[in-house]
Image (cartoon, rainbow, N blue to C red; front, side, top):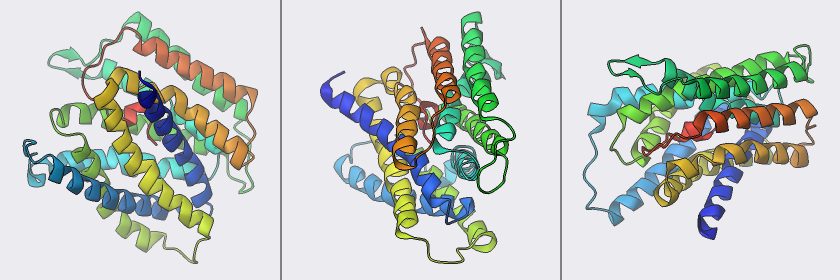
Length: 316
């Protein structure tokens, strides 16, 4: 990898890692539903503008299937790759630290590998669950267990709500990412990746925003810190990061781009410790090490030439 490629890789990890920080700050002053709705609206607008600019430069690109033909697929990934995981992570961060959430979210490739090994089609399993891959999954999920046990099911934040609920919510979000990622790998094969990424956000915004306005409207004007965080989350942590991700895919391929999975939780832990004064426990570091080791063992020897969905690389 060239110095430019490495800069892009670390930049992407910094953006996605900062997303946990932005969520933690914003969710203190607005509901998870409203936070995610604004995030999706801002990401949609940004990606539409970028898509329009790219289209004017690459007019020779074959036309994509019309939305009316693909809307069911866009709807499916909007629910599994955006609405469910974004909302659950924001809800979870009301109860746990941003660093803990980032480590639990790093389990997404483990869930993806598990689901791929168990998903049976006419051709058999999508990715055979070999003994080596099974060992990697056991090691990775052992790291998740260490993190949860270490934090303690009876640990309470200032809100008085159990941290265990927040941890489970983030794990369910990671599981949802795994489902959406596997579906997207097949449904959007051959399409420019920016299209499903854009329409995923648009469909998610259209679905979620009415519920947020009715069920969880803002009762007061948020502070500039919260506003800045949600804007940064939508524009930088979602739209710009996705565009950077696909640029990396084009430059270095899927196998190297997935290295962001290893950097993201480290960046998130750093942000949480420095900017939010979150404690980083030995259990968190041990859990992170085991999760990343599990991902390494599970993925070793596997050459993936297809575009890897962003959520499989650790997007939050």
